[in-house]
Image 1 (cartoon, each protein chain N blue to C red):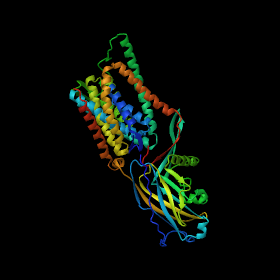
Image 2: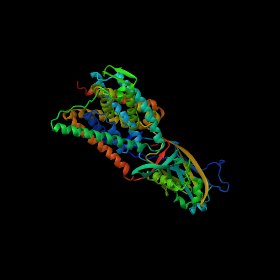
Image 3: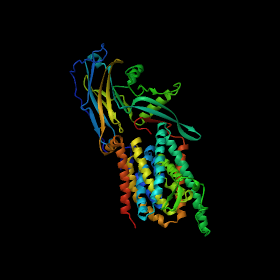
Image 4: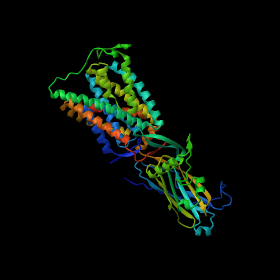
Length: 308
Length: 262
């Protein structure tokens, strides 16, 4: 059964899209990630134009982050004040990112930059995660106790000015690094269609030393608003949000996520992280191959009206 | 999927009045064409169809007609847009768009039908002047094109890509005489026919010389849910984005209720 995607302007098999959404939803439930960094490359592999894949990916991120954020809100593990500072940086970053996006599109290098950014990001994050999880598995095999490194109470981040007290997180921290982190993630959201949780969470824990219990909820809080903002601006400026594609993806995604969570609870943390790392690397390598092999057609035609 | 066939019948204007038109004075022939409607609506599962146009030559020379000296070319031109052709090259091992050329206002779709191969109807120079046929369509680059040495390369790539994707088509036997001076022409509407005002153009040639031309507008309107979405996305983009976000919020929120575990 085919369904026509009005914005991507092509017909796709609805079961492939459902399967994609369910698979990514399953993985995001299992690993506790948003899944934007998987859905966008998968859509590109399935010949969805990258501009549409990015904007629609951001829409899917809104749906998958909402249910997580609601759960955290009920448990009271969201630091709204901290989230708001992150969000201010995030909105500014998303605005800059959208400007970069439009500029790249105009000069015809958008597809290339999206692919390169994914290769770089997935390659780095995947390698780091794989390294960390293999070490953890080794230690576990030797029956060593696994301790999270939290060396020293202060680093350069804590010497910055403009400090603010965040009661819920029980920290006293400068707003500069928080807003800066939000800003970088905002750029990633609008250029790559990712929520950015898989970068934001480790950065908040290791760099800003924010207590782990509020980190995930607070990052989800920021992701929802920055992604929603990106979707609205992408729709307004570039007409690239495909609501049909997004809807099919999010329905399959939220259902897949429920099963993913159950499977995830049965696996051990470091095993999970090693699996996720392999998956991230595989997607990155696949994208890298695409850039290197000679294309079938070296010319492309773009009309002013559509443009990608 | 259903295949729609739009056969549009003509009002045959046999005794057309000799309206004052910008036509060469030396020829007595007039050309008339007709389609039953100036607007067609296409559903979103449209897979392409043939459009039939009827026409008549008025004031013809019976002798020449009998000898087959009259030729007719009918083209369906889609809406025009500035169109960019980009070329990839390998740089540091990866394939990057390096050169590009933008052509001014070229049709988004083009379907040509004629009594025979257009290159045997009139000299290529004349076809170039009138811009009839994919090979003769004017492709004028915009902006700086250097010494123009790569102009041919980009034009050829443009024509090849548009023909291979099926939006540019030709049928050198698509116009047939059904009686002495009446003819019917079938032009193809491609599956991804663009929305907007198309123009049906008919040209009459006598012994290799251009005699008369006629043009009729044809509005192509896509209908259905998908089209409504496209229209909304382009005409109410902010509202559309808001709805997209709302849809995501509701989906996520419902999921958290339905699958609530605590």
